[in-house]
Image (spheres, rainbow, N blue to C red):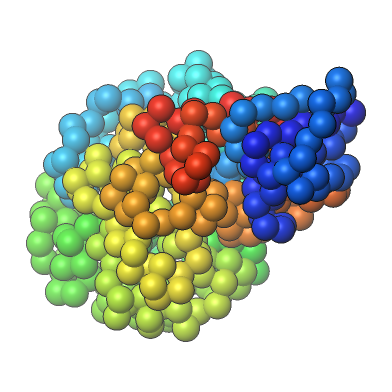
Length: 390
């Protein structure tokens, strides 16, 4: 049994507590919280830290299998060029267990306890099986050629079968509206009719919007250069229409990136219940040199979560780093609110809120300590770090 306290404790279950004591079993299960009205007397059995205790981080969007591409793809080239580079380089050392293990260790050191991981194959499964992070694996489907739709479904089914053998939580999911033909989207909608969680890359670039609007632009040119474009282009007419008409209504939906989304689209998409909007600021800056419209998403009442994307499009796999970027570009966002996005909201989006995201009796959320923060104003600083306590 451990009894742990700090200057502040953010539970996501009650108001911010001052010098409360969190009790936990050695396996991390929370057994109780003792509020002290800020008056903590010295007791030998209490570990006290000068910082903020929070639940473990939830990374709602990662591509572990792309870890070998760290530093390989130029920054700021835009989404079409980024996709070209991924296609041309991903086969080099893909599935290297040593590289993926290092990435998982980094995530664990950065306080990530639960991760939604995109899988185009089974290469990362053995690495995830032997980690101290919980996973939901998104078996991702691509395919712009309508004639290959049934083949793509069959391939996803094989990867899903492998995930099942490992006992993983998983769901089959489309990559995006611009990379999946309408026939494949419609097959997927039927195939995923009982999904508990679905993840879709959404409004990542201006070129994506142009491609859906009239099948022109740099994304189309990227497909042509790759030899992937057929004469018969079949895509949804727009983003809101694609989400509402072509994606399963079952369970939660996580829309990832949202860098170029707009209020009109958001208002339409919010007709769908249980929709979560995933921010990956480090990746957005790396690929497009642009932050998502966080203030607009907040004002429209969107439920936000955080992700890191992959080491192909980010310099590290740190949710704290993503929070620092949000603080830098949107200083009005309160720390308590960001912590909720990074913990409880993420657990809810991944359908794991019965274990993660909240410091409460019976939960096993992990405990983190934010150190070197501005405790007077409750703000992150460039030098703020995270330490895993449980």
